[in-house]
Length: 431
Ligand SMILES: *Cc1c(COP(=O)(O)O)cnc(C)c1O
Image 1: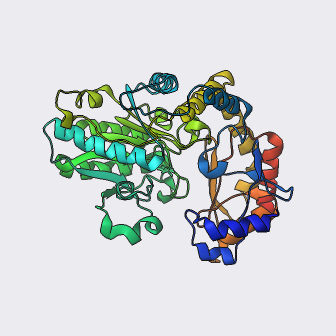
Image 2 (image 1 turned 30 degrees about the horizontal axis):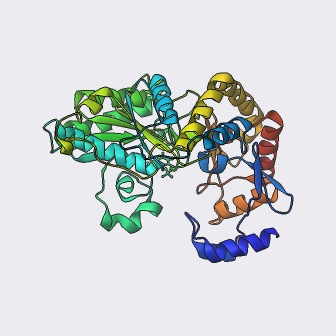
């Protein structure tokens, strides 16, 4: 069967995510037959460079031999088992290793990023209830922040296109100004701007801390805001303020964890430890749905009691799935065996060199980079910029998905120099 046949069958039966389905009357749906490394293949032999890591999840390429082998061998032993009252080898090993990496004691599992955000919000509120402060039930989040699309996660998300329709259903959090350094005033450094925004955050926490349970933020890069980046000093200040006003700090590293910003966790660059750390996306290298909330010991201890109601009774059916945990263990093995953080530093440097001309292109504004993320705004007045750019890129064998006028690269870490050239050259041609 050809691309077109698969696409039409899909459009008749699948309701695709984040899509106005009628749009596919104009824009073709793109069927993928297989993947290898940084490339995706259609049914007619053409290939496309996956420069967005299949929605920010892929780390080590499609059909990675090491991850494939790990999942296959796990399949011979155990695919899944209930995690209440039972446990298994992959979930224990993964929890131990994530704890060593993060310095956080306990791991609570779910399947998607949004569910891990729900868990962190519920746990934070429940912690304060268990410790005699039931009035702490509000959350502070950052403007333009994104934390997922279930109702609880939407309440701390500030992306109008995802939130506004459902606003009657959600209790909006308190919004603090974003430290996004594109918003700095002329002559102000990113650090000065982050410090100024931290002062604004202080005012909110100072006046309302008695009703605030937690501050949730995406450390260093607000992904869905258009790869908005901020100076790490903001994290340091946020940590200090949360300590001073007895507020939890929830680090949503669903997109930025696992080496994306240059360190294993993004919050390391602020020299801080969050109370809650949400991880998903790259955790399985883009293979299987898995998310986790890592928490400090004091959080866990506040639930440890003879009374059932003081426990955290939340659950999902596929919590701690053995295949997904095994994939995550393979990902951690690759980080260690292939010295990925150090390798990526070099890749990032080379990519910046190759992007020199692109960053000075007359239409390009705010060219920025953090680890293995690059982004810039394109000056183009036309309303259909996003769509035209996307189609032009596909035409050239490139999968890019601008957000508004923001074009970003978030390639799998296996991208090589030739592929980088392909990415940059074609982007230049589209511009
Ligand atoms: C993707 C994302 C989420 C939601 O994760 P899902 O698995 O899509 O539910 C939450 N927070 C951030 C920062 C994300 O990038």
